[in-house]
Image 1 (cartoon, rainbow, N blue to C red):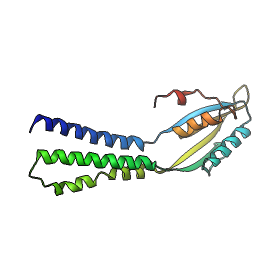
Image 2: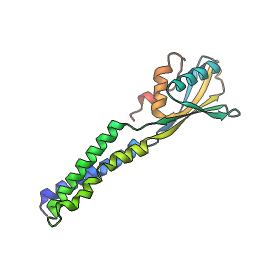
Image 3: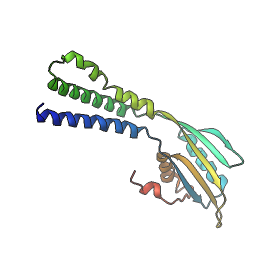
Image 4: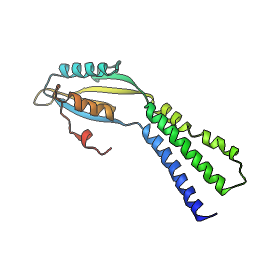
Length: 185
């Protein structure tokens, strides 16, 4: 086997491994917990958060009065442009792998590699099925800080917590440690 084909085969296999890891990362659960405080009353903060969440499509899903927890549920959709892109990249990658195999084993007929190319669109299907899911957001009222106001613990997807921090920090006077906005991930 010529060395050029070996290096192309190695690169093609590495690209396939990269695609698998991208699919895993794209559908990974990124639930995070963050504590926030506000000088406003707990009722005003909860009402502001509830209204904002309902405007974004979240629906109330009960809670626990004893633990002072309020739950919201929302459906997260997968990105259709990303699913199409992954299908195209998977198809091109499969075709390239088929061509490399054809060069390494000339006895294989080109039509025997068509099923390999047919696996390409499977990347978009896998992404769409794993990324579309139901998310839960929990608001838990904590003991009031010594200086007054309210303290909440939010448990939700990291992107939703960042949106809350960016959009409601000013109007509800929310404060957190700011780690969501400085994290490299």
